[in-house]
Image 1: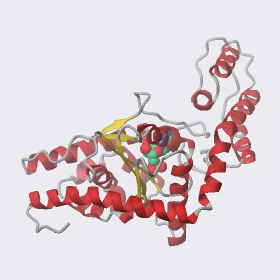
Image 2 (image 1 turned 90 degrees about the horizontal axis):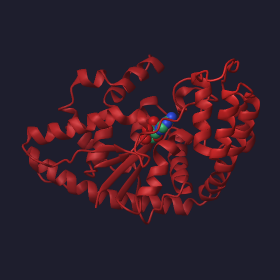
Image 3 (image 1 turned 90 degrees about the vertical axis):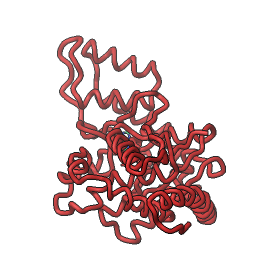
Image 4 (image 1 turned 60 degrees about the vertical axis):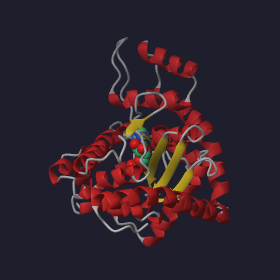
Length: 332
Ligand code: AMP
């Protein structure tokens, strides 16, 4: 059976980018593969959260995983820091990860721009930690959004490099995966780039947002001054609105606004109102589940404990093999 691993950083609430890029696939895959889904709290330390923020975020991400339909009976859900074996594999992989290749990584360059006063080694070695998360379970499929494509390429490099160095076939090659075949990039509401937690207030719609908040955010989304001739290409900002509509609205609704764009009668206010209502229809049942599950502390505790146990068994098996190949004493 194919092994699947994926995670989401615990840096707050989950947004539509996390859902359509990763989570939606988690839910679909859990009954046909051996799935490990984790909450990436080691990774979240690159931005130095306070202990109480960190605790809140871990609980929130776990709650949102469950609210979206991840079934803890079918898959293993665990907290990354509950599996310190990952940190050991991260250290071992770092010995064969070269500073030059890590510095060339697009996400590292983005982070340098976003947080110039906090360019820590954790940011530089983010891809090795991600490779350790994947390789610790010998996963071959990794459901992620388009922004993670390069990280997956690096995970393959580190896996192959280890195999070559020790003349083994320990690690299979992991590949990014999406059910719709091409990887997804959900745009943000600010007219540029992608939806993301660190892209600024109002850029992201969260699964836990109240209806009024969703309406406000969508109505404020960037558009343009409107088409002036038929067949005019859409600006990035307007294309983003259509892309978001493609995720939550009916085909006939999208066709209607596409047609009115093409014949220059479109009113962005009407389009945004419709988009907001369709988003609310999609998000409000999830939000209700988040509120219900979030209050069930016992359930959350049980899922974390069971997940830790199952993930540990899988990680120990890999590390036993890796330590023996390297020449370390047996430990696990
Ligand atoms: P992060 O929030 O950066 O930890 O990302 C967790 C998962 O969500 C990864 O698989 C990302 O590829 C995915 N993701 C985050 N933002 C987006 C986005 N705007 N579009 C598509 N996928 C995304």
